[in-house]
Amino acid sequence: MLDLSHGLVLGYHGCDQSTAERLLSGADFKSSENDYDWLGHGIYFWQHNPKRGLSFAHELAHHPTRKSTIKSPAVVGAVIHLGHCLDLMTEQGLSMLADSYAMLEAMFQANPMAKMPVNSPDLLRRNLDCAVVNALHIQRKETGQPPFDTVRGVFEEGAPLYPDSAFRQKTHIQIAVRERACILGVFRVPKAHLD
Image (tube, rainbow, N blue to C red):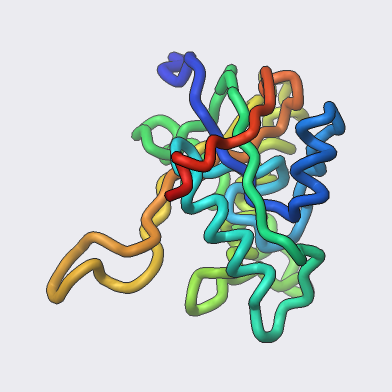
């Protein structure tokens, strides 16, 4: 497989201030393993977008129905080596994901008692997408293919930027790090980068 995703990127992780301080002191990031994670299981970062990382932490802290551990929103930066990346901004990555969906669909069709996961209508809970990405990782492991270190995708989210716009207010690139060694360092985000 041709890997065009080599290189370093800056990622930003929204969290509580106490978590940020622990991470800056050398603690490990906690992997997210929700059934609705957009890019499957992993440690989530906003690529090159510290303000979005912080605003996400604010959204979680002030969500009207979702219980959150975030009391004092913060963001930490990380230098990430993408390594062997499932890059969903490439034709090859998208093709692999489509094949994974077809495999998962066939598996569910073979077992009529099982129900295929679905994404929520607002696409904030992506149970189907999570299952498809995770199935791809499992299939690669079972066939002896090298695992992906990271998964990266672009997401159009939010209201239109202006009338008749195809641009969305919260469009972003997100990274899920599966191999912790790809996180090369953590840093405090300068206040000027958040203003």
